[in-house]
Length: 184
Image 1 (tube, one colour):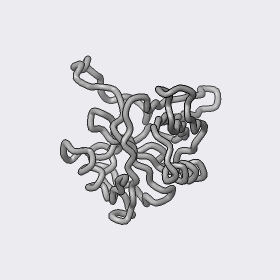
Image 2 (cartoon, rainbow, N blue to C red; image 1 turned 60 degrees about the vertical axis):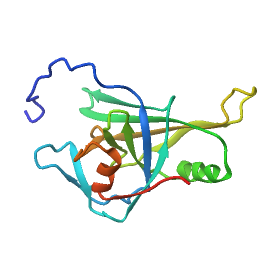
Image 3 (spheres, one colour; image 1 turned 120 degrees about the horizontal axis):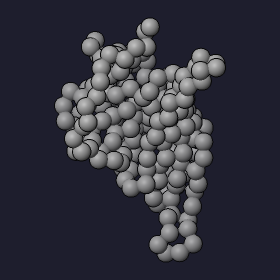
Image 4 (cartoon, rainbow, N blue to C red; image 1 turned 45 degrees about the horizontal axis):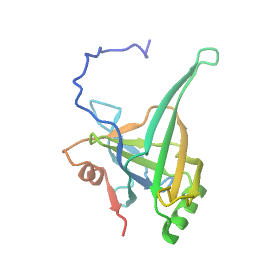
């Protein structure tokens, strides 16, 4: 059977942390064909449209999360992976207002850099869609003024990792062929 497992897993050291450091939005269908590591087909080394791929970086902290849920139906013989990214972007600006509108209209691919230096490629084939969120000013001085956005996608496989050729996630993203556009 081609889905037989081939390794076990020992209990890992408790040295990792939760949280997202940054997300990088890539316009849908801008990636081209992914090239995978020859020894690990779950790791992407570069994309076919490199080096002409723009990745728009958003720094995030705090309440932003990424969750991936495998779903299997024995009756239907299907398995898929639901990818959900919840972003909290404080502060309302006219520039961000336009960007949020464009994100809601599109289905971007999203690179998710976690606080452990891993970079996941979510929405690799189909992209992720804005499935909810809010634009809020709050009621009291200490309340949130900004954007919350939920992105949801369904893929055939879990989010692939970008190859980690060094300890700097931004450098690894650039090595994979992305031109990173940071905020102003």
